[in-house]
Image (cartoon, rainbow, N blue to C red; front, side):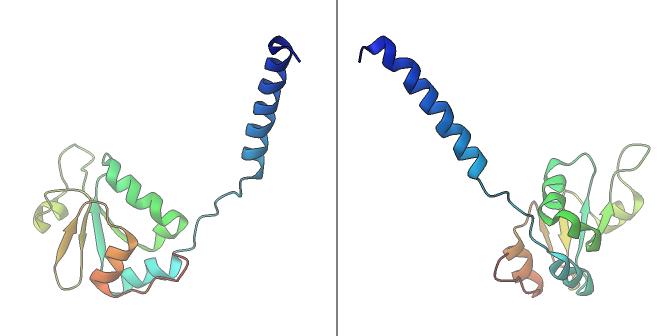
Length: 126
């Protein structure tokens, strides 16, 4: 077979393989973190953040629908600047996680870090 005849077959085969690869991928179903999020709240954890903070958005997205169970304090004032609650709490960076013992951790935290900080168990698939 000549190279000119082989090239279209190679392209078609590549397209079919790429299509098959994407069609056979198992969709990722978000994990259910409801129990973990509720435990964080029950044990006094809360996250201070701002709607303009991309790392805060990342933290919220990590929880998926379970975010509704996390205690969250919005620090962005509608008039700009920081809310009085966040100023009174001395929040300097977002996100800031505060725990019942008044200890704090700033930045995006992996669930393992949150679990270790407060003692809320993670399911084995999380």
